[in-house]
Image 1 (tube, rainbow, N blue to C red):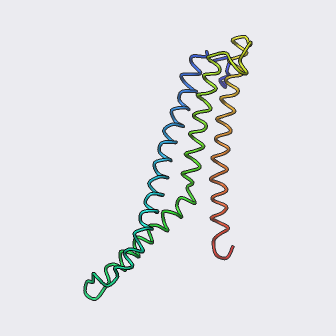
Image 2 (cartoon, rainbow, N blue to C red; image 1 turned 90 degrees about the horizontal axis):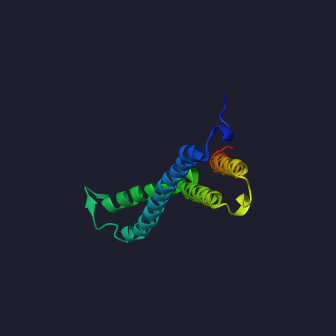
Length: 164
């Protein structure tokens, strides 16, 4: 039997559904932001170091091999990999999407508890049903947005392959 909003008390719904999602979105936003900033920070710093190292070429050799060229090659490869992964994984977009959803849920919760906005003047049952509907719509909207970002990224990656 499927659970309905009427089967939950407001306290149970808030504690078992809303707060669970808020916490999940908060954790995911923090994780995605951290990954995005680390990848971008690495790309910027490493990209700035490459020209400096190129100007030092020939200063350090090992058995006739330019150590600097090897280092520059590895750093350049890591920068390209980092930038490419960000274009596929979209940590920035995910971070912003998760944070916005978490904030929208908190805003909706506060409006419901305060009886303002769309909840003003509604009977308790009607306000609760409207609240559940709004929360579930926001969760569904976020799920669709994340799926869209990942699908567009996957399609872009497929279209950019040679022979496509």
